[in-house]
Amino acid sequence: MIYLDNAATTRTDPEVAAEMLPFFSENYGNPSGIYGIAQKSRAAVTAAREKTAHVIGCRSDEIYFTSCGSEADNWALKAAFEAYSEKGKHIITTKIEHPAILNTCEYLERERGAEITRLDVDEDGVVDLRELEAAIRPDTILISVMTANNEIGTIEPIREIGEIARRRGVLFHTDAVQAFGQIPMNVDELNIDMLSASAHKFNGPKGAGFLYIRKGVGIRSFLHGGAQEHNRRAGTENVPGIVGLGAAAKKAEETLVRKMEKETRLRDYLIRRIREEVPNVKLNGPDPADAKGGERLPNNVNFSFEFVEGESLLIMLDMRQICASSGSACSSGSLSPSHVLKAIGLSDSLAHGALRLTLSAETTAEELDTTVEAIREIVERLRGMSPKYEAYRNGTLESET
Image 1 (cartoon, rainbow, N blue to C red):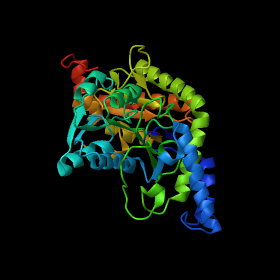
Image 2 (image 1 turned 180 degrees about the horizontal axis):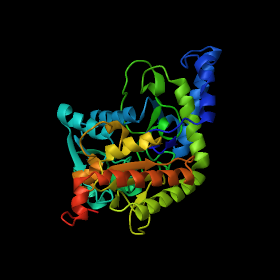
Image 3 (image 1 turned 90 degrees about the vertical axis):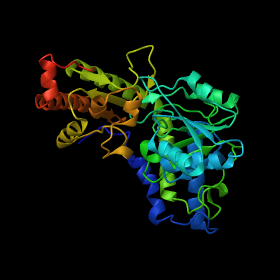
Image 4 (image 1 turned 90 degrees about the horizontal axis):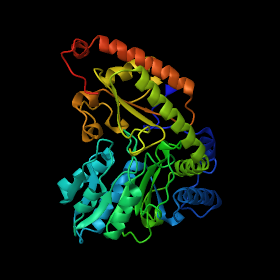
C-alpha cells in the first residue's frame, strides 16, 4: 500500500502508541482521584500539557485538551460569541475554512443572530489583508482564519492577520489542524489568541485534540460538569489519548526541520513529474516554483486533471493500493464540488477533477514514481472514454488549463 492521504489522518507513530499502552490497563486511574494510580494518570496529563505547550511557545495552563480539532473549533467560536456578544455579534472568517468553522458560523448566524463576513481569497487561496482589515467593524468580536488549508496547502499570512486583530482589539483564532507539526508555530510571535489542533494529524491517536486559549481571553466552559481542564471542559480526561498527543507533539517538534526538508523535496519532485508527464493539468494552490507566489505546506500536492472525473481516478488508484483523496475527508461522499476549489475560481469540471496527494516523513521517492506512473496510465485511460477529451483533440473544445 502507498499511503498519500496524510491530510486526512496519519499513522500513529509506534513510539507514541507504546507510551499510550500502560494507561489502558496498568495506570488506568481517573486523574481526579487522590490515590497513587490516579496520580500517575494526573502526572501523565500534566506532562503531555507541558510538551504540547512547548511546541507553540505558550504556558501549559493555556492548553485545554479536547476530543478533536472540530470540538476545539466549535468551542473557540461558540464560546467567544457568547462571552463577547455585549460588544457585538460580528465574526470574520474566509470562504475556504474547514467545515468545522464554516458550519459553526452558519449555526451562529442562523440560531444565535451572529453576523458573519466570509472573505474571498485569491487564485492561490490567500486572504487579502487589506480586505480583512476593511471588514473589521466596531462590533467585530472575532477573526477566525486557518493557518494552512487542508485541501490546497495554502499557508495564510497569520502573523499579519494577528497583528491587525491585536491593533484593532479583536480576538484572533486560527484552525491549525493541518499546520501543527508541519511548520514552526509560536503563538506570541504570530499574535494568536486561540489555536485548534488534532493529534491524529501529526502521528498521534484519533480522539484527542486541544485548544490553546491565551491567558486573559474570557471564554467560558464548553462542556459543563466537573472541574476538569481548569474548570473549562468537564468530563474525565482521555488519558491514553492525551499521553499520545503529548508524545506526538514532542516528536513532531524534534523532527520538524528534517521532516520539512524531506517533504518539501519530495513535494516538488512530485509536482514536477506530474506536470512533465501528464498533459492538461492545473496545480491548485501556491506554486513552489513561483518566487512571487504564496507559501505551501511541505507535504501538500493538489492537481486538477482536465477531462477526468476525480472520483473515478481515486477508485482506480485504490485498485492499485494507492490511497489519495479529492479534498477534505470531512466532505467525503459529497457530490458538490469542493468549496475551496470553487473559492479559488475553478470551474465545476476542474473542481470535480481534483486529486489531493499528501505526503509524510515516511514517503519515498520510489512510491511517488509508482504513483505518477499509475496516474499517467489511469488518466490516459479515462480520457480515452471522455467525449469532451475527444472534442478537445478534434479542436472543437478549448482547454481550461
